[in-house]
Amino acid sequence: MPNRPTLLRYDDIVLKPGRQPVSGTIRAGEIIGLAGLEGHGQEQFLTTLAGLGAMQSCHVAVQTRAGGGIRLVNHRQAAQQGVVYLPRDRRASGIFPALSVLDNFGIPSMPQFSFAGFLNRKKQKQRLAGYTEFLSIKYPAMSAPITALSGGNQQKVLLARLLALSPRVMLLNDPTRGVDLNTRLKFYDAFRTLARDEQIALVILSSEIEEILQICDSVSIFRDFQRTEVIAREDMSMSRVMAAMFGQKEVAL
Image (cartoon, rainbow, N blue to C red; front, top):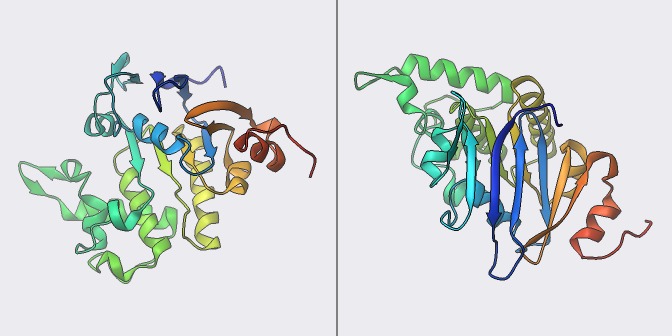
């Protein structure tokens, strides 16, 4: 995708002392998959891009909306620049269990719905209604506790929360983990639409190889805290991705 503008550039991300640094770019409208055996550095790579890792020894820069690049130093700044992160464990680090669907959706983007210190609930509800339709979120009422929703619908609310921040780069940590097939397919449709129509870049860490094969333009393979291979869509197959994950040559299945 050489004709698409670069949104994020990263240089010298070292996932473990002594390992080769990881550098590269993320372009508008592309969907990048991250794969590897559990604990081989792919999650650490994703969280570093989100500003949640050690940023002193690497360089992660985002192209601002106004033009020009700015180096990211932490997660809050990343989110302000449209680089948003969806955590893997929605119960531990995603939802606010004691709060409503509306509050879970609106807390991070509250400044957008506030003026002179007053929260415009009507505007907030209208925005949630739009994402409810887009993602087919099901809940009894916006005022219902988030815990009243199924796991898949909780995950949809978290995705809507990110969309309310007007993202340019979405970093998604196993976004369909623990959800049913219908929700999974809805997420795939949403990801394709966001990339195609909104030119949002998505980086998706997935434990499901089939998921990567279905929706990603390329997949970066991580092994032993290094990125060992980048496979383009036209070269992706189950056997090739699995072989790369195990550090082996591809074998016919």
